[in-house]
Length: 244
Ligand code: NDP
Image (cartoon, rainbow, N blue to C red; front, side, top):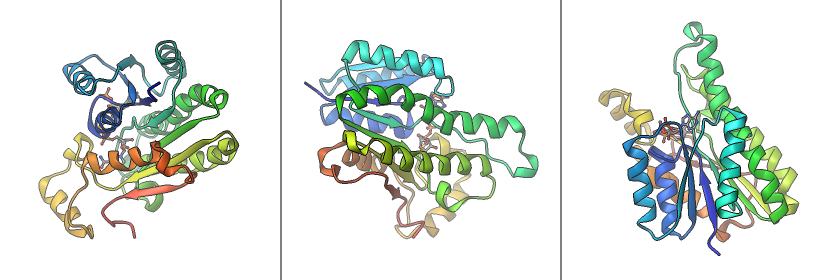
């Protein structure tokens, strides 16, 4: 029986690359999306081109009931979820002085509460199965902080605390919970930055380039695999050496 991986925010960016990479490793895939669009259809086709199944479920991770329904739908199709990748995330960058209450709440509710909402609905199935791999996508700014991102770095730091606590709770059931903390990765999230700023950032990174979505997906693939069976509660930075 194929393993099943559920990737939130799997229609574009890092999530899409993770879904395709796991599909290449013969996982059946579930992704969630908020709005039907061309990108969703293309992503589904790219996943299915690897001769695996792909189920796309509609839901907003900041909404607990949506997550409950998404997980029920995945379980009724596949019967299990072996790997959960909490990837969906947003930014609303601005200095605290200018930040609206909604900017703070939206980011916490999507990134941190969203991770709780999905994991809470998946964990009982993993506990029963005595098996699971949960990989939470945080960020290096959750470790180091970043001016203009008090909301985002708080959410990403929260994900690290959540991960370590859950890793301790569920280790005895063979469920491993880890964090991948990307640095600057080329996606629509970072495309909003001007080219000069991106060049400056690349210069400051020891490996002298921004990361690719594949750089992140490769580490998720490792953490989802049996090669990582003695690793839990860890944070792996994928940042070209930026934070060392
Ligand atoms: P993108 O903006 O390209 O993609 C974000 C994805 O998350 C989209 O699929 C989006 O869906 C989904 N999403 C956002 N909000 C929700 C929600 N409420 N419910 C369901 N899905 C949602 O971002 P990236 O691919 O760059 O980022 C992916 C993850 O990696 C995020 O957690 C981000 O914080 C993290 N990260 C990214 C870095 C980077 O440099 N790019 C660096 C460090 C961390 P939709 O299409 O519906 O909007």
